[in-house]
Length: 75
Image (cartoon, rainbow, N blue to C red; front, side, top):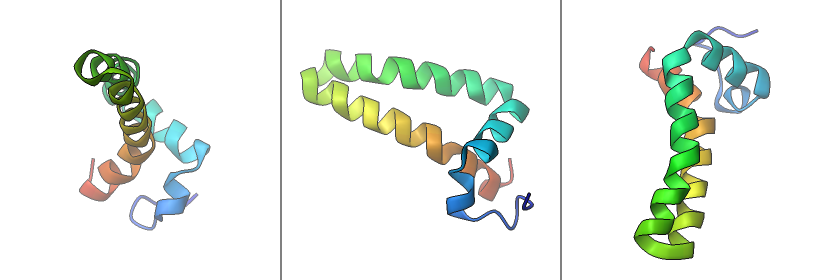
């Protein structure tokens, strides 16, 4: 398993890396669950169906990209 410094972007998208990251960062995992569930609903209230789809896309992108960004920032 590569270290956090040597972790490439494509490696960070793998399920094993993402699961390991969220297991070590429980508060962030709970926060991401809330974001994934609530952002589409907020988008629906604000901008209808387009907002719901946009909220879902943004929340899933955040779920996948957060481990990579957090490791690069040193979290």
